[in-house]
Amino acid sequence: MRSTMRPVRRGVLLASALGFFVLCGCGGPALPPMVPVEGSVTVDGAPVTSGQVSFVPVSAEPDKPVPPSNGQIDASGSYRIFTGGKAGAPAGKYKVTVTPSMVPMQGATSMPKTPFNERFRDLNKTTLQIEVAADKAAGAYDLKLTK
Image (cartoon, rainbow, N blue to C red; front, side):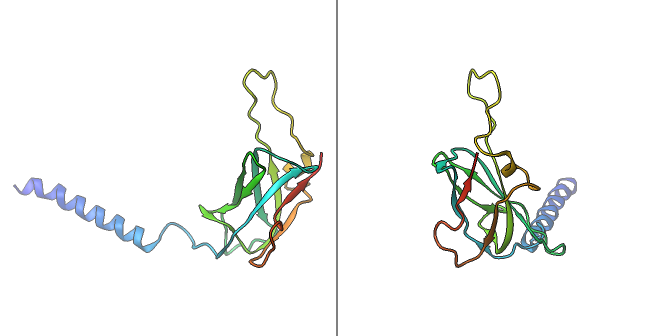
């Protein structure tokens, strides 16, 4: 009888220790407060219908790392930013990159062409900068690209 109790005790101890660590929040540093970020992406006035928008902090504090801030562009050209699985981005200044969807259409013989100027894909060349703040008006996070 004693030999069947030991594995049960070990399991209870292991589950208790795991629960303790989860409750203590040992999943990494806490995120700063998030500001909702939503906008649209257009090229010469027409919506970009797929891809990804990425926000990279201009001056990140080394002692306060923040996970990447990204959002998917939907079929209407709209996007919504998420950081560390939470909606929004921390307040601050960001360089913005836009990466098009590069999935070829069925039957295509080559990769699709980028529907906008390549500089918007490159963090070192992009001219897109945004300041995330709580008091921004509607349309403040719209991204207007060129060919």
